[in-house]
Image 1 (cartoon, one colour):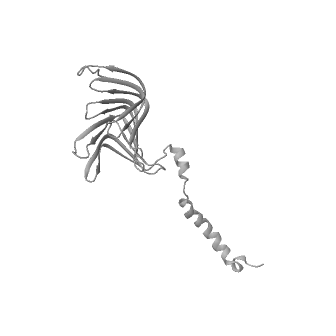
Image 2 (cartoon, one colour; image 1 turned 135 degrees about the vertical axis):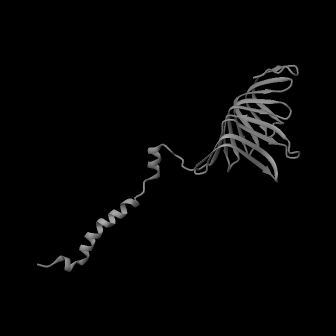
Image 3 (cartoon, one colour; image 1 turned 90 degrees about the horizontal axis):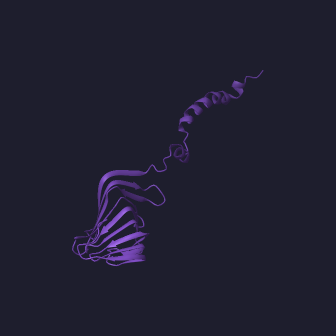
Length: 197
């Protein structure tokens, strides 16, 4: 009889090492991130959260826009990164030449796509211009490439002499020009008699 341990010495080493290799290899197994997301319901682990945030955007060293948000969420780990600014959102737009605040926007929710510069604002959107005009709508979209605001939702524009109603609107960046897509009516008022919301 031939002793296999002597003839094939590596077989015994393999028998001893095999369980050790399995023991050390087992902890290094990795779970599939998609399976973990499916189990936990969390699709994005790359979100940054903050509260009561102020963000100042400047152009050539001068403030261009100042944003206040109670709830701030930044998600950079997805295909189209975004920033959500929600709950008591307020945006102040500065005049480029004077540095004075021209327009103020308030809303409940917004999403800003940093890479494109586009923004969606919704829920109780209101803009008050330096002329004292007021825009109210449920949704407003800023298209950075066109440098225009758009909406397809109902709008109400209040000026010192009239209140204009309609569906859909587009406006330039400082609201010095705007057009209601489907006007529904105009109410003429005397100065100081503009109805409140």
